[in-house]
Image (cartoon, rainbow, N blue to C red):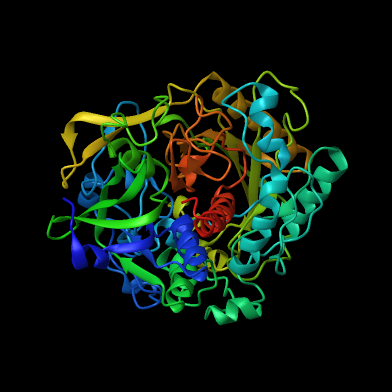
Amino acid sequence: MYIQGDAKKEMTYDAIVIGSGISGGWAAKELCEQGLKTLVLERGRQVEHVKDYPTTNKFPWEIPHRGRFTPEFAKENPIVDRCYAFDEATEHFFVKDKEHPYVQEKPFDWIRGYQVGGKSLIWARQTQRWSDYEFEAPARDGFAVDWPIRYKDLAPWYAHVEKFVGISGNRDGIDNLPDSEVLPPFELNCVEKHIRDRVKEQYTDRQVIIGRCAHLTEPQEIHLQQGRGKCQARHLCYRGCPFGAYFSSNSSTIPWASKTGNLTLRPDSVVHSIIYDEAKGKAVGVRVIDAHSKEMMEYYARIVFVNAAALNSNLILLNSTSNRFPNGLGNDNELLGKYVAFHNYRGSMLATYEGFEDQYYHGRRPTTAFIPSFRNVRQQETDFLRGYMVAFSASRMGWNRGMQEAARFGGAWKDELSQPGMWQVYMMMQGETVPREENHVRLSEDQKDPFGIPQLVTSISYDDNDEKVLQDFMEQGTEMLEKSGCANIRTMDSGQAPGLDIHEMGGVRMGKDPKSSLLNQWNQLHECKNVFVTDGACMTSVGNQNPSLTFMALTARAANHAVEEMKKGNL
């Protein structure tokens, strides 16, 4: 429908942002600060900082089943129940399996958070910059397409984001993990420091660091202005942080955008498609279905930012059809939805360490030790492409170790359990996967969701390269633990489906050539320049780092470019 007159004016903004998660919140902040009247559309419910964190301060005994689900609930939600952060105290921030169905052509666990703030309320908060070793990788190693940008293009935007978000960590001087603007770091414990020292002695290409994470260890003035406070190391983050100590859209970018007076936030707004005006040769607005009334309405703007999270952004663009774009907005080359990639989390290991029995640690640190990627960094040197980061942590076994000793009983046994057990080391991988055309998403031809929108079909899997990366991690991880003096090393392949990493990326990739990519160097659709895509969908390759910091930097850069182009009359 096309509304005329004053009614249409009331539905018209300078900019529309689809999604209120990590990248959508940043788009809103930057656009509102620049004076644009901005409408943020969120398909989920309203969640206000602190007010809508119902379990954030509850003790285990105040939660009906001590955090565990009933067998009936788990049976109804086999997909989301596999997520590490999903329990009885956090389930209100996750999409249940029946709420937004999709078609798994190949097994894929799609974890989603539909509310204001999106998955920024439940992310793992690890933040690392990319380097030119990642941006140059596709061209160097011959996969995907060449990135249209390099590290120098994004470096100032990384800094811009980091200062506002608040990143704890060290300046480590690692060329393939560039230093961030950091607050004081969390500390490695004694066993982690021991492993760090042994790794340094035994290897010249590996360095153990404390993970950089989006937690305020020493709030600066910009964070106090946001109303945020210091991290209390409670490790109850996935319930929502009442201190605003970790970064989320709810505690940071959305309220900041709101203070400008330029933000309109509309929850419960399921985006159907983007409206393309063939006479004007550009997008003019967005079709929305009200989540409660199922009424369809339209909103209009000069620019549209698509930040619905990678797969939903693909879905929206695929569903945005017109005579000009019968296969999806900007999809002249029929690559929309293709070359989806993710991070390989399948490998992990457990070990024990004898020693340091007289030492313990304080609090529940929200990050771990990391070893930046050391495989194929500067040149191809293995029989597989790319590499992986390693994360590990050491802790002392607690009272629940006694649950495995059913034959024991009595006062002496209970007294023993009141003391910490031996040290245990957990190690895991975060492997880069190579985008492949056959790894794709598309719209179902016959199945619809509850709003009448075609369901998304996921056809994404591992390949031989991923198996080789996994095996290399198992071998190298075992070797590093052995050389550090660990014992009882046990390797594990979770066999988990793609998606459970919650780092899906691609489908609307950036590139230099419109024939082989969807977006240009500013995240604009090649064929529809007033539509920007800056969430995970835009990624040409996935690197080995946690991706959210890069999404935020790309978004801030694109938003400021959009404002400049609008001022010039180009949008």
